[in-house]
Length: 324
Image (cartoon, rainbow, N blue to C red):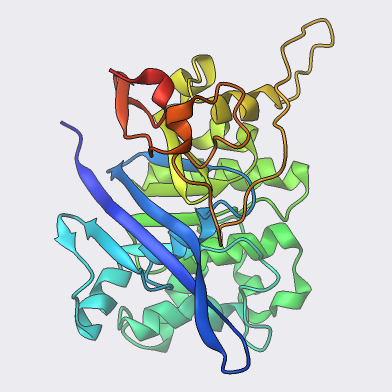
């Protein structure tokens, strides 16, 4: 069996909403609402969905940049909720994150040398200034930059170069898991391919495991091994990428894939247009959250939350159309 490196069980993250004269808590934004999944060692697990579906929040909760509301997260078989600060620092050596916006994720007052060296200093992985400088140069060269770039500042770099610096910083402490939160969405298309190829090469060279978050289905297909499709705080389908793109089963997945442009104008495919807009996470629909936009909606969809069903080898769908 494949080695499970990370596992989430019934993970929830609710953000309180306060209102009124007394600023009392009145509602919750259910950003993540009972998510369960596994990530195997050495794979790229892609997470895709519309803006606002909870993808980025899920990544931050796994990294403990946001505290979960409930549920369990296991890393290497260890549940991380009750870890002390010291134990949590050790865990951060295993999980690092590459952020979406390369213009906001780097401190403009720090040189590139100091940005990349910071994790080495915090985790005491260096033996003095010379050792730090040597490791910083190695990391910069690993991501396609030169040694003289270490003395420059973030404003002197393009978006693609800044994202390479963010990747170098994430790799400084030899993590096992890298969570890439839409790492190419802010970049030009030509630069996107360069960064994706770099991530692929680093994965092979360093034996990394990725959680790759994106809204671009073509990008996710290019880099991922398995893909989870999210809708309004929950997964609706999880499958191997070839199986998912060849045989999408959930109506939402089918609609997403129908929107991918085809380069050949002689080929035509059915375009599935979803009705309405995505509901609010403040007051999500009962039962299946997608039932308000689904063309196959049944009465049971409006009242009962669909459970996880395995419809093929490692192909899971959360839909009443596939009841036993």
